[in-house]
Image 1 (tube, helix red, strand yellow):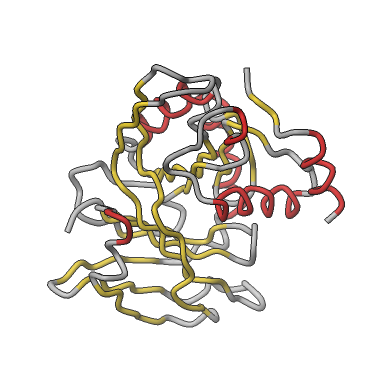
Image 2 (tube, one colour):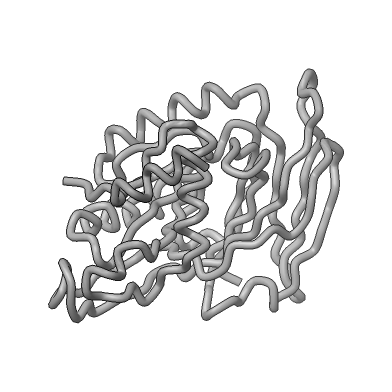
Amino acid sequence: MTRPLQPVLIAAIGAAALVGATSPASAGQPGATSVVELFTSQGCSSCPPADAVAGKLTKREGVIILSLPVDYWDYLGWKDTLAQHSFSERQRTYARARGDGQVYTPQVVVNGLQHAVGSESGSIDAAIESTQAALQDKKVPLKLIPDADGLTVELGDAPAGMDNAKASIVLADFKRSADVNIGRGENGGHKVTYYHVVRKLSSVGAWNGKAQTLHLSKADLSANGSDGCAVFLQNGAGGPILAAAQVTSW
């Protein structure tokens, strides 16, 4: 059973992938990659099955899984050791953009467009298929090239017929796996493994529909002990993801 966010927070909202763990990089060919963002919490008893699903998705071709632990269940007796408040806000931003006010754990958001219960593999598969179909004419080529100094990002032109093309270039530094012994709360006494858990999420540039190249230094890629990263192109806050690729070693 999923744990919904408290009604007071939902009311406030209403008012206001691709390569396996051993692959060094992915070339984001148009239509090839889906980004699945899992909003999870160490304080939610419904989340461990979804965290296990995330582990399976790290091995799935054509999918980038990112775990973003939220902090709004910390009051239940255990402060999530990986959570960031900005991830809670990102989840709320998606709910506002969709207009449905649906914020809960475990929740996945697929390609920035659709949400599903994070432990339901069939629902995730359906969301991947439908969002890829919706975005098939808007996908942008994206390629990551690791080098001695960091990572080169190559972005292609907007596809023909895509008007007012613009998007943010987003870098997600992640730790490939993190084991946590949970001391209290709903999962107290359990050890849970989190996969591709984001340690820093930041905008590193803007894309205006024209091909461009930028370079990310090793310092950009090593936030808080991260050992992998994804780069994706997102059209507005809480908007669709037009391109993505990841590197899981360097």
